[in-house]
Image (cartoon, rainbow, N blue to C red):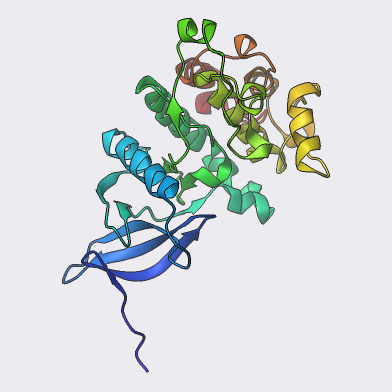
Length: 285
């Protein structure tokens, strides 16, 4: 028996690509066309909450404003009363958490420099647009077999807080993000700037080399406490990384924002000068 086609907003659903807590992403094609897209939908097995619709609208506003080759491209947002959706670029690849979970880091080692450079460039662009991503992690970095990457998921991004505004900040924000990657200031609900993402990026860099995050714990609260209080782990030479890259990652994960590199542009410039792995040739650095 032929499978019934599901049509949403003039697009035919083909394959499910990702399922999240409140949404799912489908590969779709326009009726009568061959071009494939990715469609983000809120989960339909429950009533759509106003805050979920509002968050999708904000994400779409951010995504539609971005024009960078390594930020996932947004095409349109349809605020349908019953089934709102975002139409995006359908990028062929997987997220960077997959090789970590499968223990296949050796497979991406030849691609890692290119992946991290493209990611750093994309995040710098995102910051220059005035945003803090707040959920930098391997799950939100897509890559393909050539090492081409896309930064995704802007659902909880916020406007960066200026240094002057921080002086008058009184109300704490509700902490949001993914516990394994949240900066100390994000955990404390303090106003954020780009250096919060730099901390999370350092955690991700560490994990993509070591195969595990720098902090692990038996409970969520214990994990957050380690981000706040534990010493900063250093990548072991057993991972094969060069000492200069290990030092960069250590500084990115500094507890105080002022002790971290100031911008992703600074990180990108430093990565152009150093080796990631000790056995890299000078030409590859």
